[in-house]
Length: 83
Image (cartoon, rainbow, N blue to C red; front, side):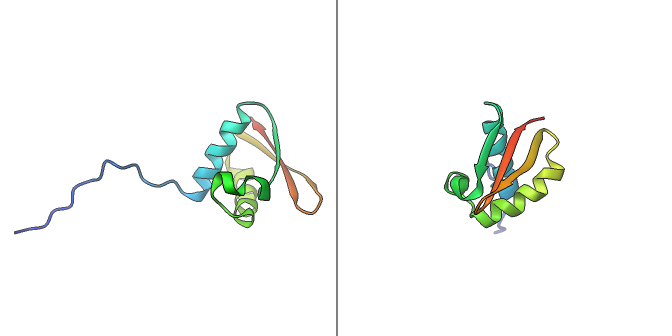
């Protein structure tokens, strides 16, 4: 008997970056969005620290989004809108 692996029909899990980018796109479709990482952490399923690190990365790589570090008052406020 030989064991064979069959491809699963289940979609591949999204990376943290993909999950955050999808969330930001959906919010940016409604207009510009201002947020602090700690306030969206539960909704995205990431820690505030992970979101902050990914925002810096997405700022340069997400060409369909305008991401701007808006202000800093006890935590960074980000501004996101569609490009």
